[in-house]
Image (cartoon, rainbow, N blue to C red; front, side, top):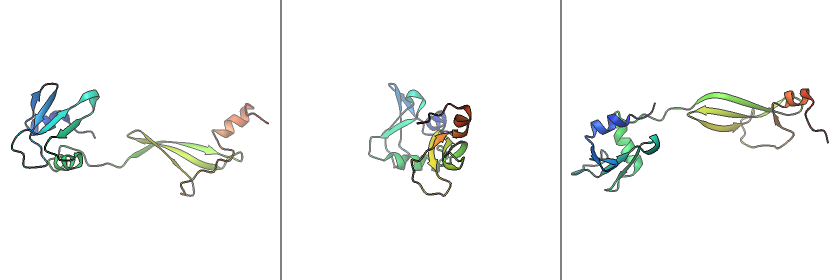
Length: 132
């Protein structure tokens, strides 16, 4: 779930200020609009000119139900890398939101760069593997 920029603007009673918006910062007792907000390239950005950190602002937005809690990434694909015997040596895991991580079957995060290819069996069975 992504934050709803329009809802943030509405709840914070933000006012247009040039290309951005200005609002009272939810992270401190703000007497005037010290928070600048924008959404360039579709990504929400903000800065408190009174000095609140981004983390403090996000915590305050979460408390108002305006920012999603950190959600656990979900695995959407795995890519097996096997040795010449077909045993899985490691996997590349794709997560949503988009991220890639490598993992080993034994849980140890190290790579032994042995004879390991992605889809090695199909490469070997096609006869296109270079034999040197």
